[in-house]
Amino acid sequence: MNTLETMRLDKWLWCARFYKTRSLATEEIGKGRVTVNGQLAKPARDLRCGDTVALRQGPVARTVRVLGLSGARGPAPVAQQLYEETPDSIAAREKAAEMRRLAPEPAATLQEGRPTKRDRREIDKVSNKGSDWGSRWSASIDE
Image (cartoon, rainbow, N blue to C red; front, top):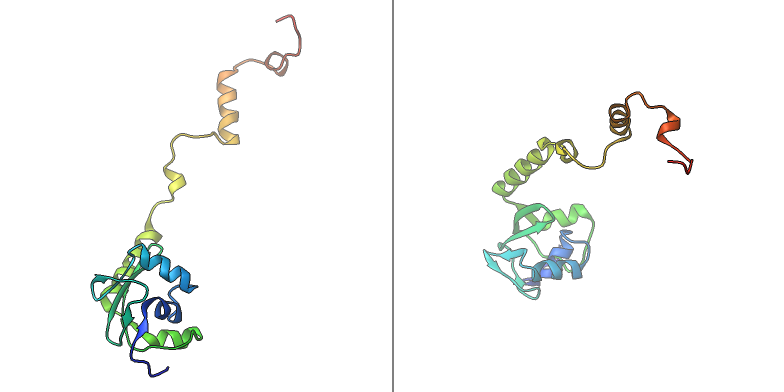
């Protein structure tokens, strides 16, 4: 870790590996998904050690405390030393993951929609009682 006193917020988010690119970090900050010490921030905001950063990564919300600043993006183990996630954030993230895991399968709740092949056969069986193949598919012009 480098001994920097301040660093741009977007660059720190990128160095700490919260976002894949700096432009993605800038975009998320611009959408208001990142706050510093409880206030909306701009990408060029100076970040210092001890600041609290709240951010969203897709459905996951995290709150971290800045422990260090780095001048370059490094490997993940080094990036994880730049911050410490708050206990409340860890608990909320685990609870959200558990809720997603226990949520019912969305397709299981569908009552209508396109019938499956099996459904189609059952529908045909009920609607065409006693009919044979020839009466169902007629190529004759007489009818």
